[in-house]
Image (tube, rainbow, N blue to C red; front, side, top):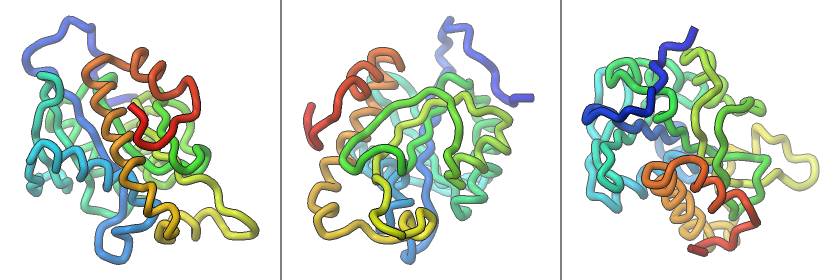
Length: 209
């Protein structure tokens, strides 16, 4: 059974968005592909001069607004495969609604340089998404998928996501992160349908508006 309340779309002043960026803690994982979601979250916070603080849920939290909407930026302080529990506790604390939970994560099935928006769906072996689904009791949340592409040759996907971006990728990465931050803004300001039309209809050039 899901712990979420489903919005009736009759918005109240208390309604808010929770935007969760997935990643692993510590310097060892800071610049790895698996931390793309956390990097995007940091970019959104930096753009709005929002400061992260520790929350009793086990998350780092920064409150801000996007387009006049109240937004809670959140990142679990646990490892990726254990991130579901603290994020569940955070959603409970804020009385979050299902259609206002947005998860930002790295995605092997999206080419590097592209950003895609998705509503619900499976986890494709992503440990962070799997932990969330397990603890939230639902797959039906919004995702901003930051493409990292699949490894070439015989490199295992689990090893690949924990590697740092290549030199060529690092040159493009700021544009990709900016695109993902723009996707978050589009979802909050314009809603899922218009945001998906903007980001999902064609291959995007990094940095393209």
